[in-house]
Length: 263
Image (cartoon, rainbow, N blue to C red; front, top):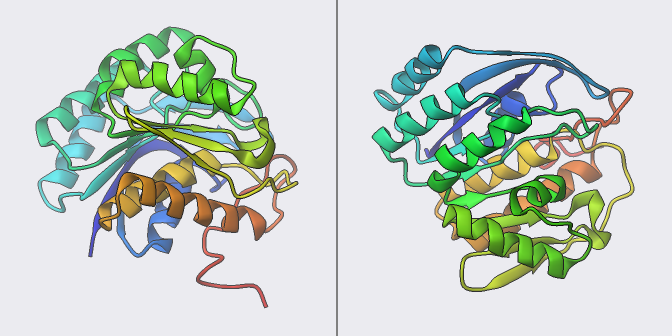
């Protein structure tokens, strides 16, 4: 059985973060493990508070995983402080996992900030260079590329700029911000677009977490980056289409829609 580790924040409402990651990994038939870096008091409507785990405890969680059940891939989600970023980066450089997927979580779906602006520079310096695949949404890509994005061509230019900082493949996610929900993948040489059509829904809580975890799971299963992205996008689209309609804000996805289909 393939093993995948998520390093991210905990979402007590179950739709994003560690909880979404582990559900996604289970749905892909891989063994999911977690390192919690922050505890987030949030729901589908708002983020109430964030409490970071100490860098020492983050390092010890990573040690505990790698000394016993070595991951075939690692997904990194929300890292809210430079100290947390350094702890994660140092340990991943030590253990050298074969695949690292970074979802540079800066904003919740409702627009609430999950990362202090001064932390973005630390993220680019310490963690971004480790990523084999980077998955910013449009607001995050605009921030990282220092440009406005209004068209798929803009997405390509942003991906090119972010690749210059990271060296890895960059998937700029269009989502609700781009007609057709177009995603653009740039591997440093060529571009590839993914488009499965827009779904008119508010059930989008945790889509970024879910997509990046699905990509990491598919990489662990042996798929190439373009194949892993395509399979992950199809999975997320299904999970959105069959969302359970929970909460009063941006609702969660149905991560097990392919395992437990609706009657």
